Image (cartoon, rainbow, N blue to C red; front, side):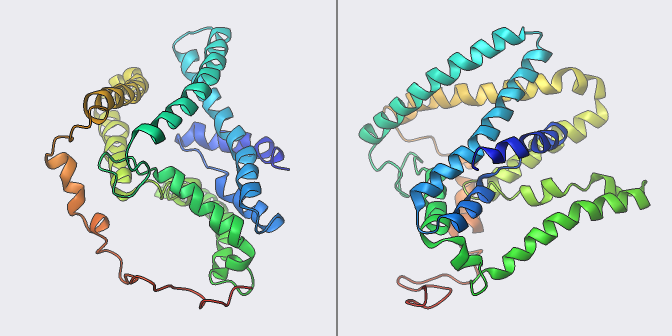
Length: 292
């Protein structure tokens, strides 16, 4: 059943991604399905999630690379060979680097790691295994669950696209044509591990290139915007490698300046935006011992 999900959703999600450059993940829906099927089995939940989500995710990434190769006039066979070799090599390198990191980096994945190796994605996956695997969605979202009202969002998610389409057909000149339910509801899927600072960076770059530059310099935008996006991705990867060998590996302190310290002074970073802060030992939700 896990393999059936990417077969069903790859084309619809691919269409949304081709239009909006946003991919809707199957990670949550796979967690919910297997959580109801196999409650209390976190390892089975993680395996089902991997087999149900990653084929779609990686398949669309491969398609995206082939699209870039098409724009750059690279033969499809050459692209496919490069993707295959890269996939095999990346599998070896990723495992090797992970083993080395856990053995060489002090306090790896700890919240107070001075170099920022706090493993937010891994923590998010672990929390999901507890919520949907150990506890199970039936206890959380079921008839007597603390978050049972969240199930209404399935109905909201199904009705909203129809509503937006109807508004666009009735008022074609209104701004309803810019409303996209997958983007509105899917935009928060990256939190965690993403933060509001991450989203702000995306908004600034997106507005600059896809609104300001497109509106004022459409010719440049058509010719260079896609290549600029690829160049920025490549530049980020190169900078990360340089920063690792120049700063992290020699265990040097990263330079402090406004761009690296301003985030520490925000309400989100300091935790002051939370209305109620739990004290040590306190809990919220159903009282202890009420889970059955």
